[in-house]
Image (cartoon, rainbow, N blue to C red):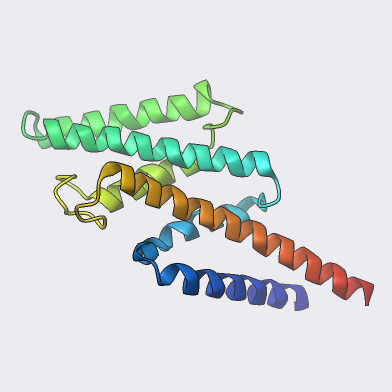
Length: 180
């Protein structure tokens, strides 16, 4: 019970300090992306394992790239194909290829973390909007693709850094308490 309370306190304090710092920046409205990386801390406690964190970050970035391919399909082909056809191409074929890439082609390699790839794809849809991406409809407004990807990657990396800091601080405090 004590250690759970301590963990909650550490998480809140680290999050508060980061939120206060990032909240003052123009990208503060995108801090929610960092919480997407935190889910993996609680699911697998991987914050101290650098390879898994790098794999998640690369997979997330690949999801952003797949998301841009999805945006490209919606932006340029939604007028040419029916709603059913465009959803089959985007939601069926593109997702199937994404899964094949993450689970078969890149299995146990850097971009092989399928949940993080889907997270990147989802963030793309939220940032650029649907059904007509690139027209200022998403949360990014009129920011460019490059700026949007950089913001998303920075916030996701920040979330992984927060998870690492939480783990580090929590371990240090609990070790100190054991010694006393």
